[in-house]
Length: 112
Image 1 (cartoon, rainbow, N blue to C red):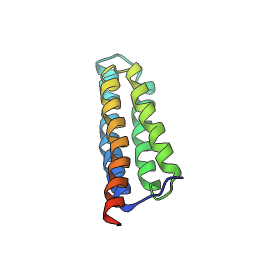
Image 2: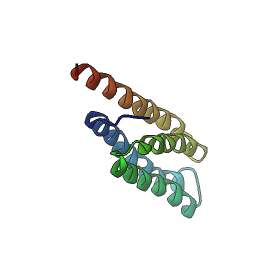
Image 3: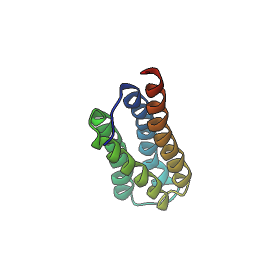
Image 4: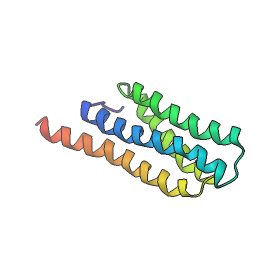
């Protein structure tokens, strides 16, 4: 079970907040550059952005970190529509993992 710490919540919320902006901007790129149907692009892009914001609100609970990891996988999978998202999704997934481990390590050291 994941022990949720204030630092971990802050770092993960920061990652998800920035990711919400990027996946929200996915929508116009998918429509105008890749030619994806507007309904599909809006559902995927704005749906992921809303999911990021919902997960930010749930970060006090341990299951939200699993849900946040699912968001990372979905962000990478959105690269099937906009290939650049493979790279951006991978970067955000790395930031997500780093945020969890760095916060746990730093708060473990400072609690001693």
